[in-house]
Amino acid sequence: MNRIKVYKVYKVFRVYKVYKVFRVYKVYKVLDMNKIKVYKVYKDTKVYKDTKVYKDTKVYKVYKAMAINKIKVFKVFKVFKV
Image (tube, rainbow, N blue to C red; front, side, top):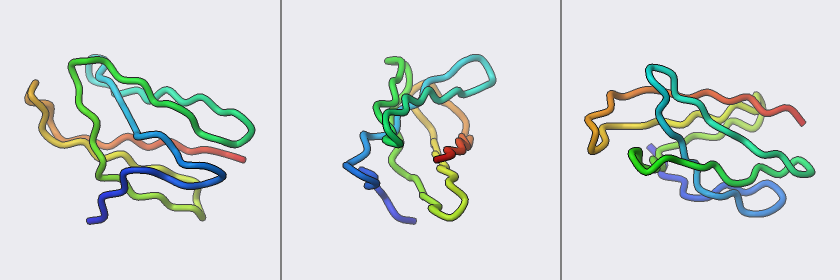
């Protein structure tokens, strides 16, 4: 399991950050000239770095594990189109 802290495309991606909304975990993205910017997070959740990047499908999988709030394991899939 690779622990990728930053992601490279044109520049260095910021660290993935997600926050919890009831049962759904939403990831906010900001695109700027095909560059993915900051993922903001609420204080209740932590940043999880276990992430795999698939360039062919443009799919970014964010894996979260147990946090202080006893959050169950879940996946967040985001598809970015150029």
